[in-house]
Length: 114
Image 1 (tube, one colour):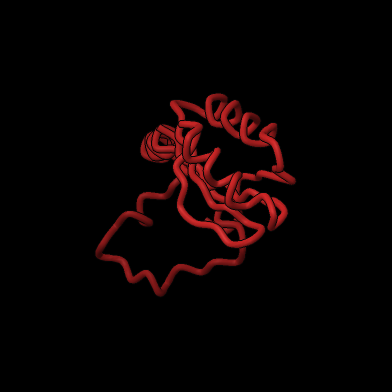
Image 2: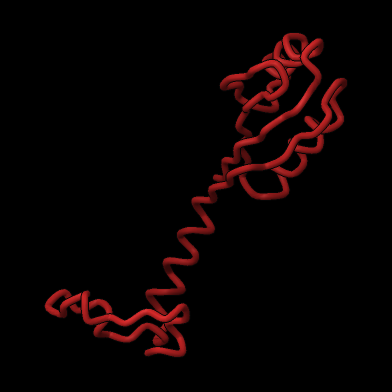
């Protein structure tokens, strides 16, 4: 499951009507707004479903812009965790709890330092 926050910009005179349309649309979940910005979230089984919902919002009347600000993907996170666990690129001593973490020297690129 993916979830993303969307910031929608509109003109002050269209804000209340656009909020009402977004709430009725079932495309997103409304959170808050001011005169020119509206914050909603969208959910999808994958990024393509989220992008499709974002495009529907962008095409709504009186939307000046609608952009993803934050995105979270449960499945993507799980895949990356699996890759890390199966990879031998991570040195065993990084997972050794008996080692002093203060001894790790980081210079911007762990691959070149380990």
